[in-house]
Image (cartoon, rainbow, N blue to C red):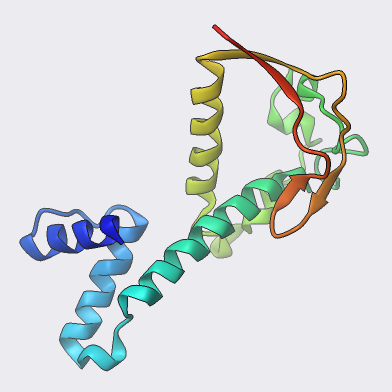
Length: 159
């Protein structure tokens, strides 16, 4: 609620730019309220629910990258070597980002999901080295998002 309130103040004072999802959503909502009154706009609670939806959808589409059709029969195996010749070779030329859609129906959360994944990895990899725990058992399962059934057992060592 704090971020939304802050962004609304920025929009109303003309300080905000509408180049990110929350700003676009809030600016559009304010325009609709100005044109048609409060009954046609979203409430603060509805805006929060939309933010939750985009967050969860971003996680789901990120985890969807582990679709077998693209990565091969060993898609569920931890195999970073598959990318040694690039993503196109790893997917045998298939559309590796199909879970986000393709062509005119591309998911608007695709860039956010990819940025989210890259940022998380970058933050971890710059501070830690890691290896799989000997007790790790690879067993992905779909709950709301794709998750490891037995947890992601890793050994992290601070650099």
